[in-house]
Image (cartoon, rainbow, N blue to C red; front, side, top):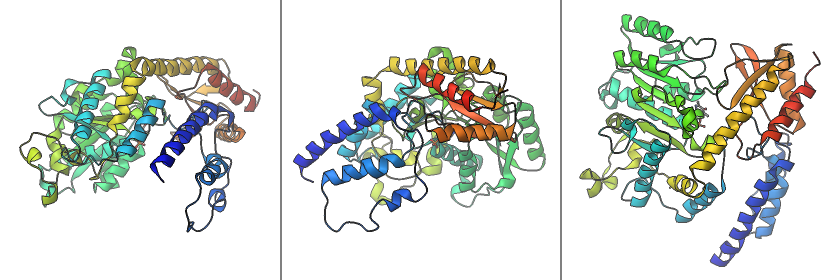
Length: 470
Ligand SMILES: *Cc1c(COP(=O)(O)O)cnc(C)c1O
């Protein structure tokens, strides 16, 4: 591709993206293809000669788009939002255009320094504790690809601290025990597995009727393990669980963690962004006692995937766990301690220039847009809850302080499952099923950038029409 062709096709592609986003509401929300359809619609072997741009775009329209779940659709109420925004899309393009690898300060000083500044900006916008600031004596923040990576990094830091660093040499990790509830995200157990903590050393702590961790159950489990000669090393509190958006009581959990010197990680991947609006800052309760924290602008803030923000109050443990310095990565600036090398703050070596997405989005859309979005989604969810309460075929099965509502049909699990299948099959809205203590529930996650009252009203209308009459 020549520079002239790049400019021409680039303009066409930007037009294509805007057209897609502005008309996505006319498409079925979920995919309409059967397994294998996409592959069968494309040639089995790669072309030997270059093809024209127009042929590629034609296949994009013909094969790829019908094979998508439209996450940017205003009637997408599934999983959790994975928002994008125009400033962030442009920043993604710029990241690709610059093509730098920000693994160390010296490999692109602007990449490292803008990222540190963006983490400080976000700390301020979310009103997070000072101990996470890059200027604090022991803390700091970094962009991770996903909350799953953030959680793994937290676990590895905890393991390093609990073994006094011996884990890197010949340390014994076989007595370390971790604590979470059945409502914690699956990435916590996955991270523990990767860190060599087997199921027999993972304690699933009881939750209460609001699906939040019971501190008395945590305290009892910790006491039992210590009596058995085991070492509690990691507890994950979730602020906004994936199934129901439950909030674990972090202040009480922190008191137990503090007594045992356990690492306390708070996973707020979805809900932490609510703190952009001052009236929702309760979502930060207890963070001043946490060792690490993460939240995802790629879920609820319009910053394209991938962008998870990870802060720690103990960067020495993080660096102890993850920094390795082969000769080819040494630099004078790093050796004098004048700079931060972000490769030591994450699992991979290489890293994309992701902070451009935050910088563009914060500067070009601005705080007011994000606050309006959080408030709109929370308001719509509360209004929806009112409509559900007025229909006695339905029941609300969990507290719903923010933008997720979990409902079920009183007629039972089979009826609830059938409703979810019928609603998703309609193509006019998309929901996710979950199980809460063995019972089916339908999750309605209200988080689309373009989701308005009429979309929520239509979704509720759909659910009512598809439900058996009382
Ligand atoms: C979405 C979510 C995750 C996983 O997020 P990724 O960034 O995709 O890894 C983890 N925890 C919670 C609470 C979530 O909502």
